[in-house]
Image (cartoon, rainbow, N blue to C red; front, side, top):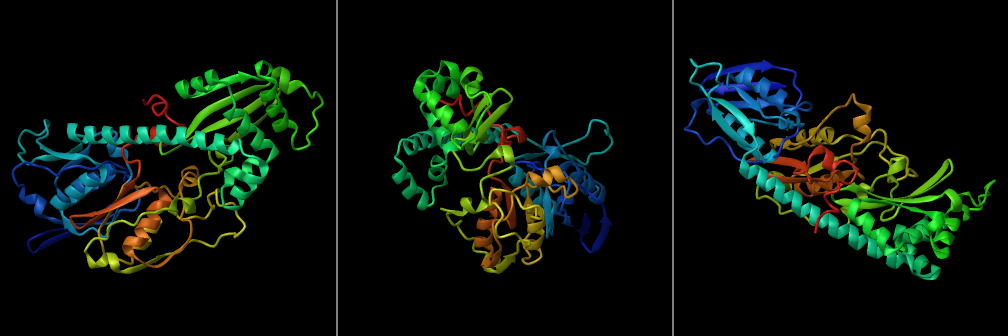
Amino acid sequence: MNFTIRSGQRAVIAVAAVSVVSLAAAQAPTRSPDPRLGRTVAAAQLAGTIGDYLGALSEDTEVRHRADEPFDQRGLVALNIDASLRRLHQGLARTYELSWKAERPDWDQDDDAPEYRLYQSEVNAATRQRALQAEVQRGRQSVMARWDYIARLASLPPEQLRAIADAGEPKAQSLLSPRSGEIMRLATNLPADALSELWRSGSVKVPVAGMSPQLQQFVRGAVLGTGRVLPDPDIFTREGVFHLNAQGRLDRPTVIASIVYGRDAMSSNILYHEAPTFGEREPPADRRQGLVASRVPRDRRFRQKVTLMIEERNPKADPRLRPGNAKPLAVLLQDLGGQVDVPILADCEHKPGDLRWKAQQEWLAESIEDKPLAEALDLLCADFQYEWRFVDGFLTLRPRLWFATPEQRSYKLPRLILRAP
């Protein structure tokens, strides 16, 4: 990271290698003016944590900074920064929904210069909780609405399903498949008490032996419908168990169904086309459908044309699988920052040496070529599930689920959605 600190006619330049992590948004320090906050700092940061960033900032500005746990471990990308410490404080706080507090360290009673602590205030916590509760409600409503939609699809005759599949609905095509279609019909026709248990606890297990003849026929169709021959053709009836488990992100909850019998098993995503077991995810291109354009800032830089190119890809590759050479968000932001001189603060991790982390990242659906900056940001954020704002001269980006913990953002669906009224 490169820092430039200017005060009057004097300038000091220092270089420090830093990492940075993600935070949430809020207010700037509110104490009496500290003249040191007028110093201008230029800093570029591509990878690391907030804690590392503030540590380097403290060393090079001689103004002590720190962040409370766990926010000190959030990722941060900072590009094209050339602002006073005061404005940088404001930008960081807004990006991560946090606040600053000026306080004197207990260990240094002779130093009157305050230390600046980035922390979550009661207001920040309440804002974060309200956003989480609203997302939980949306998640509950979406999973129930999607379930009803799939149940209606599953009841349609094949000729209607073919017409809907031809119109672009992948789940209609799934219902025409002997395996996934029968699993979906089995799930949506379970008794009410089994479905109530699913929505109450997030999972349910139903022995095949205790099912009605109609439901057992769905099981038979799923297991044998592809022409498979079993040495023991009745094993799935005697020993089989049908599992339903709620999974998915807060903003895309789903239900995974499995038929387990003997040493064999088969599974299917009931609500969506991707199969998370095999690393499949919602194609980024799907998130661009119905995209509502953001309000364009008056700043002329947001009308400047930019280009973000994807790497060469196999045109026959499954769009639900992340290309191995796809660029992480931080690299794309670096490309963007090289084309438009706008200060960027992003709640974003970058771990190029961590292959497991890299495989979990989203990816750009297709190249963004010669688009105004505002339009390019809309497309980029749709693909990576981010949101952007331009406030007080900073372009800030953060995950759409910025208010959720890393665990709540993970693929295992938190039970809090199912407990929502």
